[in-house]
Amino acid sequence: MSSLGAEKSEEIKGENFLQERVKKLRALLARSEKPQGLLVRYRPNYFYLSGFSGSTGGLLITQTQAWLLVDFRYWEQAEMEATNCKVCRLNSSFWSTVAELARDEGLESLGFEAEHLSYDDYLNLKNALGTTEPVAVKGLVEELRQVKNEQELALMQRAAEIADEAFRSLIPLIKPGTVELDLALELEYLMRRAGAEGVPFPLIVASGPRSALPHGVATTRKLRDGDLVVFDFGALYKGYCSDMTRTVIINKAEGWQREIYFKVLRAQTKVLAELREGLHAAEADRFARDSLQSAGYGPYFGHGLGHGIGIEPHEGPVLSPRSKALLRQGMVFTVEPGVYLPGRGGVRIEDMVILREHGPEILTKLIKKLLIL
Ligand code: ZN
Ligand code: ZN
Image (cartoon, rainbow, N blue to C red; front, side, top):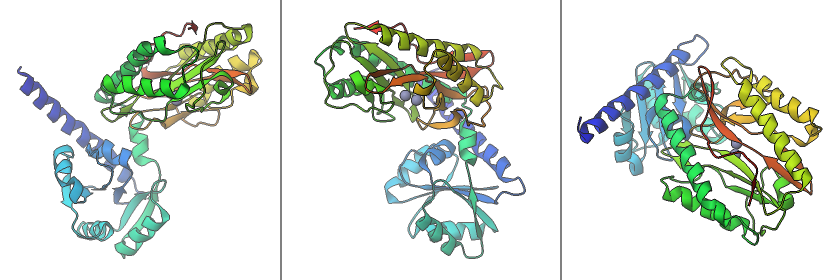
């Protein structure tokens, strides 16, 4: 097959999975207590359902139609990307156009994304709709997004590879005197050179006592001998994210640093050995928490074990003690236990995994042996 032919068949496949997603959403909406249509304004959600990557738009899904409403800036882009939708070129107000389409479709109720619509826009919607009732809907598209298809998994695998490769190239630069911010910048540059379109979150480079800050974004601090340095980073590739953490030590490791490194690694290894279809996310969290608790570090692991990842760096399922989620095949999530000793330093090790039929497939392949640089 010619390369052009291969591209074409990719396109057709693309259209199919977008249609498949809309079909699944319609099935959820068809349940009796749900509204007759859904207005999707949250970018990650309309990108998932339509392929439209612009930053502003609105998708109106009913049982028979999928309208993508965009303003002048996106008219052409929407036609190219959202091949499964009818593109509605906005000439007048967004809200009055939504109301008009809802009336034409005879909708008695229209759902909106309760977590994402501002109160102001809720009033705009309510006022425009007239007799059609606006109904708050929570997490419907987010639910669908949790289980990835093979095309999404391939993109996430590439996003993880890009981050792996970039970190390997960064290693020679990790030495005393280097500034955290310069390392973060270099890491981002390396990922973008390798094909990333950006980073999904501000990169964390936290050295010395700062490594005890679970979210220590890079600062002007210079690395010193004996520092623990936490790197938490990821790449954005064709709309999908990767996320991983490695902790290294500069020049010489003290006993307590080795100790927490291996306790965190052991906790992570335990979880990875237990992951399987049908496991409660809270139970996965408990494997890590029990392991660190028995090592005496329970109080120093204060965050959840991990999170789902995909179009957003943090999405469902949540892996924490309070999570109600059940782990299912095709979910992609992180496993990231950590120990943080205030004023001294911390260690976190984070991998991104796909849950497959027979267990987890680790996407982030950088070694986890303690690196003393
Ligand atoms: Zn991370
Ligand atoms: Zn993470």
